[in-house]
Structures are given as structure tokens and as C-alpha cells.
Length: 217
Image (cartoon, rainbow, N blue to C red; front, side):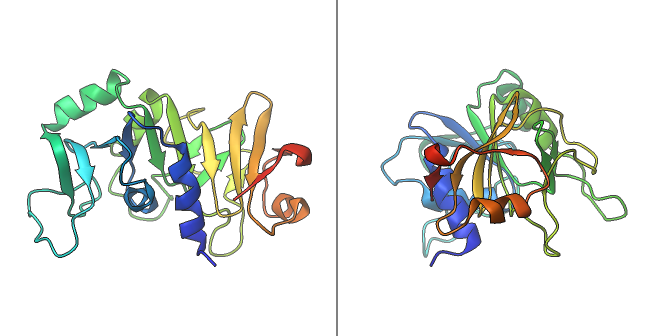
């Protein structure tokens, strides 16, 4: 039985298409590296200035100057390039990055994203998430469906300070895959063994569900 995070990452890997430039946000999304097919031709972008990131090979000594945006040591694939952050953000601002995956504290049914600040708690700043959320055409949120107290994270309206408004394309949790549409959150897939009633009970946002078309993951 896969863990909740493994379920999220395995499903998220299906969102990536060969030939894309893919940005992986800090936290859970950085682990998506390990769920992509080895023969898939994609370029992983890190906003601190690397294009062509790969996981550090097992047993390989880390290059102390090669890190991703979250500070983890990484390797590079053949043909990778390294550049300054100005060029990296120029790529983002010109919409050269095809898809980005981010975590979230909250996300709502209009596609608003809150993932950088909980008032009263330390935050290092909004960072590159603000630019990525505004400029990348496809933003996929990867997060748990509920917080550690069981409270919904998929809301009618975000309560925390926003990273960007109306920027989220799709949400993947351990319970469901939800597409942001003009009409609201449309459930595309639901977790194996989970009943629709249980999904609704775990979610504050209004969900659009056509049970005859639901996939399982």
C-alpha cells in the first residue's frame, strides 16, 4: 500500500509530458524526480539557475556548488546548463517554463494559492513562487488534502496571504485530482477505495463530480 505522499507523486508524474521544461517547487515536489520514467526526455528547471537537474546518483559525492532551490544537492543530466538567477527568472517571466509543481498551505475553488506565509510564524519570504505562479501556464499543486488536525486545505476561499490569485490549474492530493474550472473544482480522479461522500466530507470547497467519468489512482 503506497503512502499518501507516494500516491500523490505517482499521480503527479502522469502530468508531465516528454519535451517539457518542468519546475519543481521546494518540499514534496522535488521528490517528483524519482517518479518520472528514466527514458522520458524532460528538462528540470530550478529557479536558482539550473536547467537539466537530476537526482544525485547513488553513491556519488555531492558537488557542494550544485543545489536546487530548496538547498538539496543535485546532479545534472548531459547537456545541462547553469546560469545566474537573472537569466533563470527571465525564462520564467517569458513563459519558457511549461509546468510547475508547488506545495500549498491552502488552495481554493477559484484557483487562488496560499503557500508562503502563516501569520505569526517565521517565513523566509515569498521567493520564486510568486513569479512562477503568475507566469507559468500550468501550475499543479501537490499537497495533503487536510492539515495535521484534519482541517480542509481545499477551501471555498483562501484565508492566508495569497502567493498569487487564480493561478492554479490542477490540485493533486492523496484523496483526489481536481481541475480548476470557471464553474469550480471538477474532480477528475478519486483515490482507490475512497467514497465520494467521504471526499466531500473532507473538503470545504464545492466539488463538481460526475461519478460515471471518475478515474481511480
